[in-house]
Length: 287
Image (cartoon, rainbow, N blue to C red; front, side, top):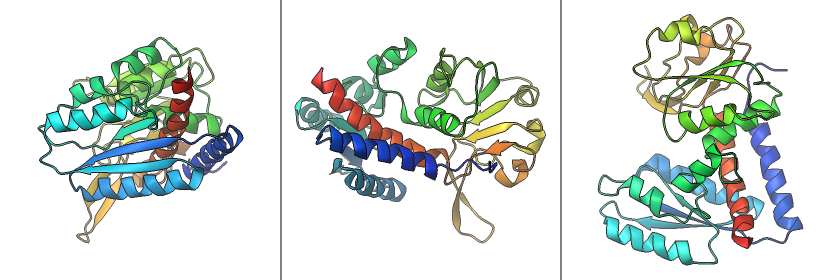
């Protein structure tokens, strides 16, 4: 098996499953994306998401709001979507402007339509191993491990980053008693002491800290499996922009046994898991 764990074959398999389920069950899933402002990277992602949705049979609609939108107006729009039976999934594109309270938004969204899985109810159900939406990036990491037949059972898994979006939920999922669980998990963060000593002890290292090329070969053990969740925009020596992960890919490639690229790795699968959650939302709303 190639040591580079690409996301494309994983996402293709997920999209095929989604498309087949939609056709078999004669579903008409609808996703509404709320997009605030005019961030070029976010705009590109939203357009790509619309195209992917259409390709597999999901209707995706985007509501564009100006960057000066008030919290009150935002909540009114969200309330309408919460109560609209034709809408199955709601996704709020980040980043949001400073005047919008992200925590309040996460609490306000209908948990049965919360395809990003940021609502406390969904996070709580995930913690208790109940049927619920799972945050898309952690779900994508597990999907890649499963696809490439990388076992986590009894392995030392080190996660760099303790965010509510990736680090914390991923740690919980890796502790589950299932085929992508049963790991011994260590979470590292900005206050962790002897970081290098911990990362060198990892069988699987998952980087999710938002620091460009932070992980170097000095931090890893020979044969480690590296899953790079980070996506960082940098300016190159040629004064152009490029996207890199939290891992110095070229530096760590030879020393690792398997490694995910950026771009073309976890992010590709994250999008597929989001759209899979839209179909799952249809199922939840039938209950």
